Length: 194
DNA sequence: CACCCGATTATCT
DNA sequence: GATAATCGGGTGT
Image 1 (cartoon, rainbow, N blue to C red):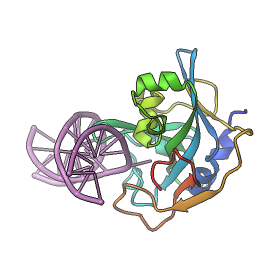
Image 2: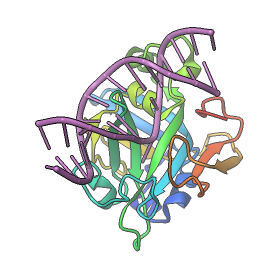
Image 3: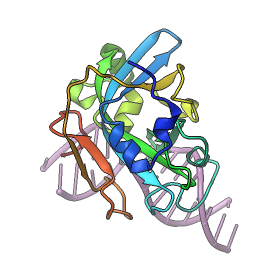
Image 4: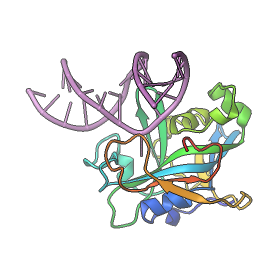
């Protein structure tokens, strides 16, 4: 259970997206409450891709995508939901990030249910807006460094069962469907769509 | 400042 | 599977 170093995120965005599967997102609230989940679904977005928020250049809202890798890029969408990305790209790329689309809940499940009341645990973190709500991820965490201990960071979890990876078209976009930059763990019940 | 729309979700049928 | 809800940010006037 080690924190993933910044160098991990300094590679081509789709590679990082694929390799984040099976890693663990840890959310610490008030230095005491620990919530965590295994990443089971991701998508890659980089600047030369019309579906990427950075495609039309840097703005106040997307600036994190252009800054140092290994930080959180969080955005608010459809008037309701926050979504979590981790900034990741190789040197030659000006901006890029990995959208965390779904988690398999591990620690603090009862607390997650308080942030996001739901009858079925399967409905707790199986979508980008859902997991942000369950882990209490808001714009306050914008730009947080996930390569050091703090309110939000990502670790490796060697005990997680080996799995197969499937890639395909990204979900919910109107441009850039050609590239297969969505990655998910085969047969995992917490993947948002199959 | 008005207009447009989106990397979603819940709630129907 | 179809669709309404909902609102901040980007764009252009």
